[in-house]
Image (tube, rainbow, N blue to C red):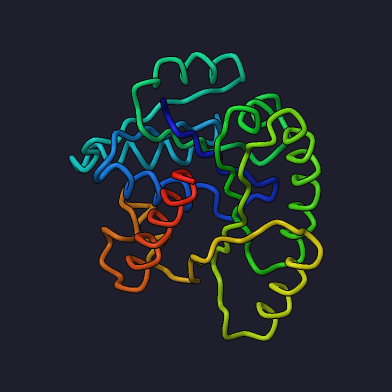
Length: 215
């Protein structure tokens, strides 16, 4: 049975597609993995995958799209044989977003070090809390993105998130690196792009996610 990972965040530009594409590319190296772009017509993940295919880099990774919740459920039925299915949600509470919350084993919430993203995440976590009443087994984790831990503001916001959001964060943090945007534009993961630090972050993200899902 597939392990379903939903990547959700209401704030645009927080890094949903960065997390989804890098995690999908890395998991696909050793597992049957599918990436489902539910942010249509924006379609960042679909565009990334299209470039990846043109460069003959798709490998074992499959991409699907789902514009609504019924389409998502049909796609998930089709992907039953896959070990991992990653869902990239739209930046709003839509019916497909609510469906993602209800079908995911693990919810990853990308968060950058800005007050606006924390405010948006507060609203999202209220909706996740409602989903957890029906599916208490859902795991939710914050993923720090564009993180600069050496800055005072990032340190202060990290403390604020621990206090206000009360949701655990992954140990792995994705740094503020040009490698992520450069790789995305070329249909690659940051690990494939060649930045050593970004590569280590992506590998660590994949390992931590797999460990969480193994329980």
